[in-house]
Length: 635
Image 1 (cartoon, rainbow, N blue to C red):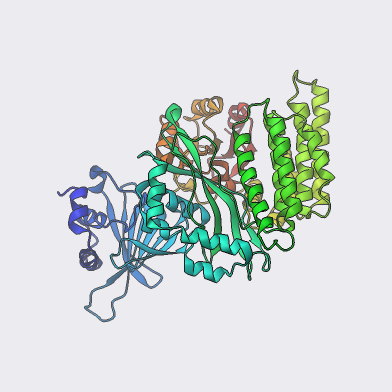
Image 2: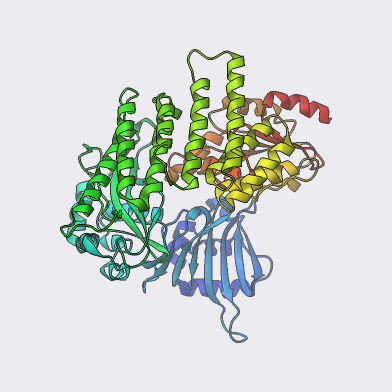
């Protein structure tokens, strides 16, 4: 039996795959393991993280023929039924002719993450991302991107800089032709044109060498504000979508050896369904940052006309640089330094808001969050008073901003009591909790159609669930769902509604895949009660409590840890789930991942209890000390 690795080299051609595919279409239902290995010899055109079985598993893989949506194909499954690969072909034009392979779909943990289409296009799906690129003539290289998010554009940029791959960077950089289509005007247009001209092979190679990325350096995160639309007439002849002053965190190592450093991408603009980086990034050698290097935006629009010498644009650029520097200082500030730095940052944001009407709401929202962040972390107790001062500056700000401030004020007032040292007396704490809930209810009534209003409704709904008042909780979830629509808040509210309404009937669970493969299937769990156990690795006590009951119940674990490094997510989840006597659903996005959102949960521990007949007994059991008694009552 040839090894999988040797088959990769031997069979990785389109002609071989086509011949294999035709043979499989006429094969008998008994398909041997050799054909399974031959299918596995097909590799994605791009470097992507997909599943392959071990050599032992390959011998037991199952090949099945399918017909779907007018296509015929073969699918390869691991011995436990998890999908590995699906090969699609359109029906042959004439009888007896060879079927032409059109798509190869690759899977990770049973979910499609990548697809090669007609050897002309590469597409990423689900946890693989959103990218979509046209293949060059070699059928391996991405010639151009047709769909690319800002995050993915910066991922490509870091990968290109790490390997000194200038063509790869060019594919995510704003080109001279694209610049013409933006129709930029004035000093901003001149400056952007200069930045685009500066993207040369020599300049790129020099920059890549100066960054000195270690071999294990990976893209960690995109640090950027909400994308903004600059209306026509400010810096361009048409509306322009832009992300200002974006920065990327580059990471190396793990645990105590981990290091990270920020590199400044600058402005990112939207061209159709892709985001393009303006010019070249800036930064210092990895591990040797002094904080002296930053990027500034020339696309932040000014109020009124810029002076002929461009002084207004220059002033805004200086503010952008100062703001980047201020945020960087806040990230590393000590508790003693934070209050003063916070005051300075807020004043700078207010200055930018005053100078740029188009950015007013965005800057005010950032000012609110900077102050609230200090209150929340406990390093800026005077922040509650500062939030009250900010209320006087809102003026004609949008309802979204006003609701945001009010929500932060309400929460800050509550935190001042709940975080006080020494701890307040129970009566005082209860009074503060009552006021907190009353104020949130007033916010929901005053700002029913805002994001902050929806968030407040979700908080109130969770409180009602803790008190086992499902009717009241459902009322708030319904309001949040109507307000937030298809946003994560709205989807979570819908998941919570479905979960609550399932009590006494069949459970309403989102489609979920176990870490390591296999779909969550309640029908496969027979003979005893089942619990859906939402847990975090930080809560060892709850995990131990469920371990003690694992012989009495079926357990579907839903972990809500956020993987610290997406590139190392698999290794991370292997570590935290090792030794657990139940299968787990793991999503690197944690509480913001699809499983948690679909279940409508916002915290852990959380248990959905299902009896042995498949009916939901409790949809919101959060006190695990109750679980043994509840199970005893069910017998």
